[in-house]
Length: 431
Ligand SMILES: Nc1ncnc2c1ncn2[C@@H]1O[C@H](COP(=O)(O)OP(=O)(O)O)[C@@H](O)[C@H]1O
Ligand SMILES: O=C(O)[C@@H](O)C(=O)COP(=O)(O)O
Image 1: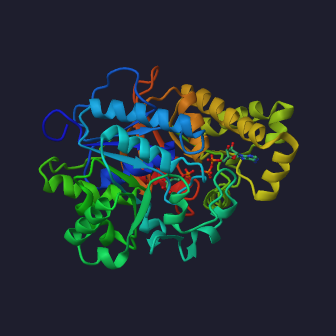
Image 2 (image 1 turned 135 degrees about the horizontal axis):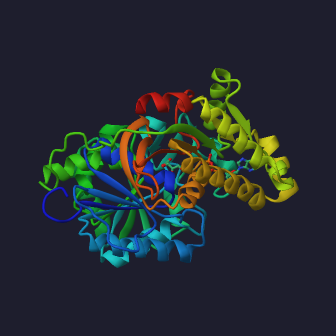
Image 3 (image 1 turned 120 degrees about the vertical axis):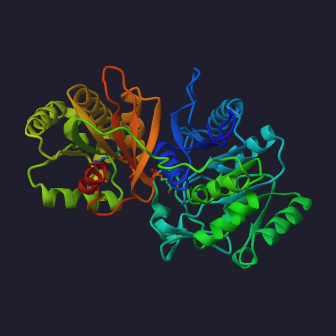
């Protein structure tokens, strides 16, 4: 551990790739970080670990479940001695009017006996910024960024004070850019003046890393902070300034990667579609396309497995993907239902991962948040050590796996993250 026998930061993330994104930024800030999948049932060794991120699947589930799971994670993290708790949600504030961001934050504040928290979704390097409480993706307001059509959490309002006010009975306030420009002391005074007026949640502007540094300095002593992964990169310097954290050389050091390489993609996000296209342009014979309609008929998964075995025996680059343009996805969803189409793909990719890892795949890249959740669960992985960043928000990770001598190297890519050559460059970073 950092200094003494406790972890410094305990984080609760509402999905798996979001957890990896935060863990990645904590490592970049200089913390040794472990990601656990769900709340650990037994004691785990946290020697030489400064931060633990508990990955939940609480973004789109019913509010009660999200609250209960988050409180269970909080309880476990407090028992590990976490000095500060971080509730990580999406940099596009994915949620509905019922929740889950407001209710989870309220429950965590109550459990911690705290009266106020900040909401800092920004991730500037990936184009997510907040100005006057309004969330932008690149140069578009959130409600004009594509997120208005998200299948589970359509985001049709960019005014986060208004969005959050629909999710909590408590007062919501704003710390705007002009305030942040005055520095950490002025920001702290503003937060405390808002607290006197019973403002429980403060939406924070952030245009760039400088704003995030000010926010980290102003909030380091708060029991609970919430946001995207951007704030996660700024906090470790503050922990060091308080003497809670050693200076760590190579906080993201992993063992050498071994085994063959495989890319599995169940993401249909725009960035992933471009990455699939780029891979196929470079390796025209290297891809196998899955289709939910063919999977439902039976036989396609076996064909994919045979194809994979042949490519792997030649040590050739390999991508198995269900990623498809919206028209194709809609057609499959209309024929099979949204849930069944998704489940067929997730099941097929998970089973392929389990079989192929048993047969020697040791470097596995998975694209898509839900897809990553399904694959990681099917592999029985309970904890991921965080290593080197491939692109902002996506690191290599390593997981011990029974039946495998060396750990499995995995990269879990959130749908909209990563450069166009991600599926090939990721393995060069690892080499
Ligand atoms: N061709 C397809 N037709 C229908 N659904 C699909 C198809 N390909 C993938 N899916 C499903 O779409 C969902 C994509 O979500 P996810 O993996 O979270 O990606 P992202 O991070 O890009 O949102 C998964 O449930 C996946 O199984
Ligand atoms: O904060 C972010 O943008 C990401 O960490 C994240 O949560 C992305 O969600 P998915 O695209 O659903 O993986």
